[in-house]
Image (cartoon, rainbow, N blue to C red; front, side, top):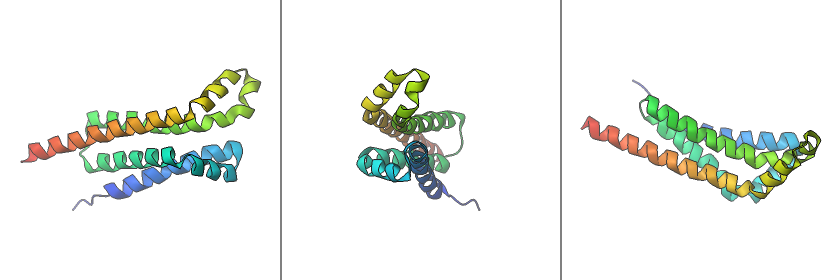
Length: 141
């Protein structure tokens, strides 16, 4: 009998994305600042991590198909990329030395928008996965 671990994989994936975020921020600004920033932007960071976890949970509950693999990879990459874009403004201390200070200002200014794009990609990914799962149920009947 095959056990369905989709909830476990979803929870671990969401926690993994949060740990990824905290690690990146901690590397550049310290652990204390990472948690302060998490508290100040929780309303964007938690939905992003939860959405990512839901996608992974849905994905593992569906039979593996090439189409769904691409969808999860794309939306997962956007979620992770949004976290990195959110955190990358902490490179302010390093970016001027490599001559791209305009990038640091842009990343800081649009931080919330990067996270919102990640949340939107999660919603799209979850919707596609639910549609696919419902189609699979219809085929089994």
